[in-house]
Length: 398
Ligand code: FEO
Image 1: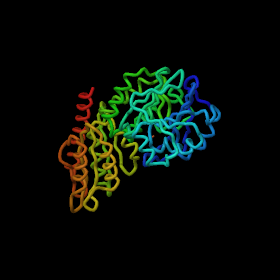
Image 2: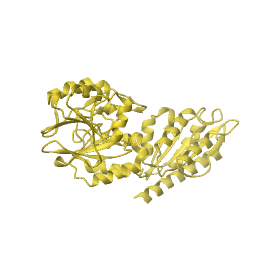
Image 3: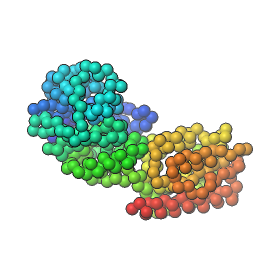
Image 4: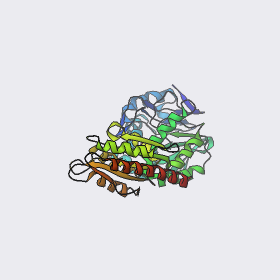
């Protein structure tokens, strides 16, 4: 199956239809590991695939070229989903030089026995001629590892963007005009939220660099290739790098004997209004990967947890710990929850919000056992504040 991007430029990656857990990221739609082959007078393989797919890659390459004609293997990113096949590829391609930056060489040396590999270390902005066309390397540190880089083919206005603009999305189509745009953008958002969100500032710099390039095609390392909707994905990234808030309010909770659930439903009743996208999630009936994606563009979030053994419910602690690492920016929110004989859960959840620099919308609402009508009315009022704040933050960010 040849997937041609340009004359003598092919996608040679692998589709991982059945992967559902990608180091904790729930990949409901599978994924792909994209590699590309570019041939001129000299031939370059750009990135490889995850180790279990090395055989598939090595069976595909001889359909397009012979192993001894591959001059360069470019490694844009050392993470094993892209570099895992390198040991087999470097063994199979006797003439190939491994092209990467200095940080990548060091990282690869920590993953594999690279003693027999011929490295060609390149610097930011350096161009490697393949003949009629050339590869220009652009360092993109922390997007999303320190050694990450883009490879750009100016003659074709083609950007190999590594993880950036990618999606965990297995499909038979390879291009953005062959798959439903909404579904692809949704997976791109989930990918950004769960993988890239902590590095928004660095990715913003990457976008500035990309803005200086003429681009007709963006070929990432995961998912579909952008050739028709480049403006859509770049605009989406412009929003995501600053966690640009929408008029969206979330109520996320856990409950033991439905007391905190009653409070959550009351907060939700207050939050619902026509001009706000308000959603309620039970944390143990929801997917943490999806919740991170929802939180990326939500303006205001209420977290509810009962007190269990003096602390939060474990799934709420897991979510907040995960979010703390993802560092969502510019959010507002508050916490609530029931307790029996000692408080603790809602206050501890609030500590996480403070660490994430949430604007705190009032003291935690706490109920000893079953909430009274008065407490439920307080929850409704706070829900209204949550939505008011969501509208205010969204209009300020426009
Ligand atoms: Fe797809 Fe950061 O590896």
